[in-house]
Length: 121
Picture 1 (cartoon, helix red, strand yellow):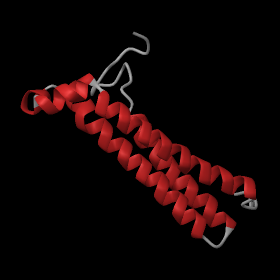
Picture 2 (cartoon, rainbow, N blue to C red; picture 1 turned 90 degrees about the vertical axis):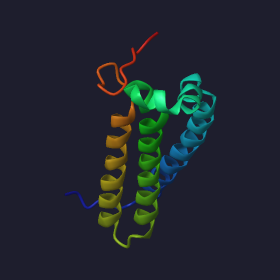
Picture 3 (spheres, helix red, strand yellow; picture 1 turned 90 degrees about the horizontal axis):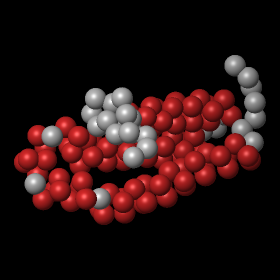
Picture 4 (cartoon, one colour; picture 1 turned 60 degrees about the vertical axis):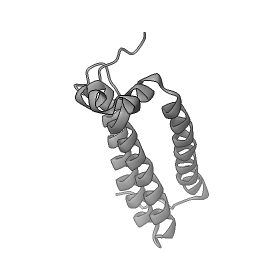
């Protein structure tokens, strides 16, 4: 493994990754609260929970994205406090990779069994 120094640029990438993730979370919460699918889901909870696609957008997508942002936040905070540069890189790699994996699961891909949506409408 390369013994690179954790430079100021690396620290900025760590910081801005977490910051942009939090901004995206705020945008997502606003869009979530305005979505007609979500309004339908919460107004027809029992019926909406039976439909996998509606349940995906009503609960699964939101929960997975919140978990992913929490992991980015935890990874950023833990890496910031690590003493060695190697530990900082390892921590960021672990937490950010885990978060990206969860984000990819939570995206409604066209081939997803949970909620398949076309790339373009």
